[in-house]
Length: 280
Ligand SMILES: [Zn+2]
Image 1 (cartoon, rainbow, N blue to C red):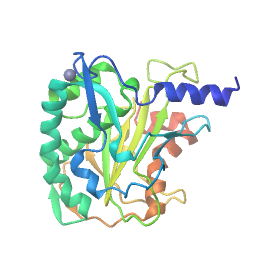
Image 2 (image 1 turned 45 degrees about the vertical axis):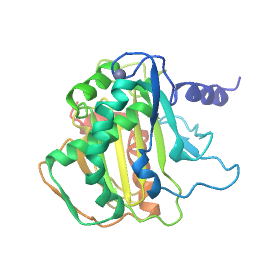
Image 3 (image 1 turned 90 degrees about the vertical axis):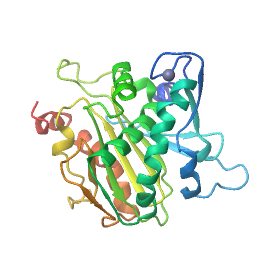
């Protein structure tokens, strides 16, 4: 098999997997979890008529092997069977219910202000979705931490932006990353993914989640366009210490696409740069 095809197959095997045991507590059997919560469905792009399929783009960090995965139906119906009933109907459902009123103004581009607690809850929700999609790439200790603490582990970061959609149809993007950790100075290229970036977009709300083994990365990383201009993407986790007034100046389609690639581009330019800015 050609290398590119082999890698595509590997990506497929490792991406959004159903599991026999709950990814958060290990219990059986598992039930389906909606990636896009039901209350968000009416704010998503209209489902395409006929047999049209939804696609989820997955790209590599150090190799140019992109893969568009077909979903069996509209992306709003996308579900992964990987959590037990008590988790799904318990803490996950409670978190989902708690964030709905906080996220609604963000989704609709209305005025609101987010303080520490609200930022933490929205971030926990976004990380929960990212962990469900890429459960295979997330260490079990991180998943258990989220369930117990109801906040993201410290090596995760979450940013949000106000988005003005015109033509871009991005609603979910995944960027798997294979990076060296401090304990692994070599080999240069790792075989397995140990980190990832995901983007979820619900109407006017752009959510950017990173899971990178670089301590302090989030605090120093700045979203920029490829021409160097800054992008208005604000961090909600780890909390910056300053409340966030909404709506912020909106990203246009091109800005949102650039933002979704910003971490990827940064890492691709220089794997060591991430270590440097993290002070490692
Ligand atoms: Zn469970």
